[in-house]
Amino acid sequence: MAEPLVEVRRSKRRTRTVTAYREGDTLVVLIPARLSKAEEAHWVAEMQRRLLRDETKRRTPSKASDAALLTRCTELSARHLAGRAVPTSVRWVPPMRTRWASCTPADGTIRVSEKLRRVPGWVLDYVLVHELAHLIEAAHNARFWSLVRDYPRTDRAIGYLEGLSAAAGWGMTED
Image 1 (tube, rainbow, N blue to C red):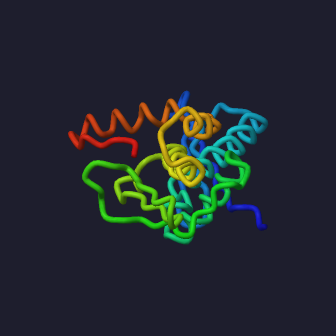
Image 2 (cartoon, rainbow, N blue to C red):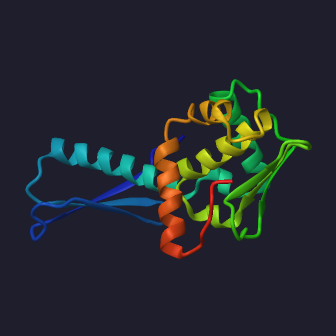
């Protein structure tokens, strides 16, 4: 892979902050004029890392299509459920009135509300693990929750969804 083009712009007026942005195929890094070449190299590398991280977060692949959602479920099942949950289909559906997602264990289908396209990837992952766990254990019993809790951000994701629902006045529930 080719090195990205980098343009460093030094400014005497800039005294403390370092900023970066994309201008076409070029990464533009704005730095104080007083920084040494070593400090410049450090900040260029750091800003490249940050920009790449932010761009990756913005385009979480599983939010792109039903096929990508199914692929993500396969990855999550392997990582958190020993590959035991195998959905037949996973698809985005128009916003549900009372649920974030739903699962029909009898036919292995999972439906995910379009409202979740805008949440962080780790929250969507929690919802997918929750629904995948229903393919193994249909009820919300202790066995079910022990499966779901293998996902490390379970409690944070539940809190995020409760806050989102309350703020929007949706009255949504987990399942």
